[in-house]
Image (cartoon, rainbow, N blue to C red; front, side, top):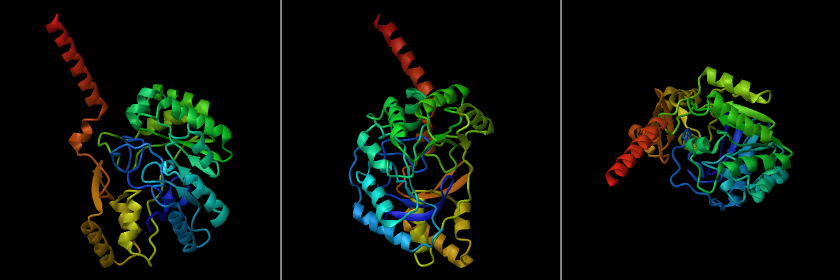
Amino acid sequence: MKYVYGPVPSKRLGQSLGIDTIPLKTCNWNCVYCQLGRTVPLTNKRREYYPRQEILEEISEALRSHKTGDIDWITFVGSGEPTLHASIGWLIRQVKEEISNIPVAVITNGSLLYLPKVRQELLAADAVLPSLDAGTAKLYRQINRPHGKISFKRHVEGLASFKNEFEGKLWIEVMLVRGLNDTEEALRDIAAALQRIKPDEVHINSPTRPPVETWVQPADADGFTRANSIFGEHAKVVSSVEGIFQVEESESIVGAIIEIIKRHPISEDDLLRTLDNYPPEKVSETLAALQISGLVQVVERNGIHFWSAARSNFPTETQSQATSPEHLKRHSRSVQKDKNSHSRIIV
């Protein structure tokens, strides 16, 4: 299938049938921890990237092929930012009114919720799961690296306005990156923004799949403890789940896995567990077919090999280190030193 994949195991939504409405990687953020690689280029243009009727028909087909109870949520979560698809509101309403009574979720960065039209489109969902990784404009730019039109002020105001209008569940995810937003100061800034937004729940998470930048590290236990304490009673640490994906025997195993890893890179161990029900010779054949397909790449992070889409833009170690906070600080000091030296020469 082109637009529908899974069900896949979700940390927060159980067995989730994923709906991908945009091409890889269409986004207005370029987060340092993103599992889909760098956003090149950033885009903030809303349009119908894929025909909405085709997406809807594929959702219907996928639901017909699964038994009652196989799917806990129908989840709009794109290869980037799903609200960039101009018909996401129409799709949500059609799914709920014409196709299924399974609850609908939208996983979004929340950056466009400052727009009344986008807020209106998402009101039909049962749960919306946006991101808030920073409590200041400086840290927001450092972690999320947004499109120029998406300011921190707009981001927080959009989340707060949506909460006031939305009757479903607003679950905000905070992705902790060690040394950036897991310090007490950074967490208290985030808590102040959360106090303004008043989400139903705060989900504390940290990168487990390969982050785009090699210097990104997940928070340690102390970081999670600090966040849980500072965010208060509505916060909880999101526990990981086994990465076992459903692959229908009636479809191409290779094709199904490629469609999944385009949105969810899989560790090699999880990939082998996914294929555990198949004979060893079939597994060997599948892995070989994936490698020669030209549609996958193997990315190493923290000593773990992840299978990801070939089109995902993962930088080299050198390229990534050039974006690290330490490198940027050194570069800033060097530039300032050059400026001071230049000034003395002129004088």
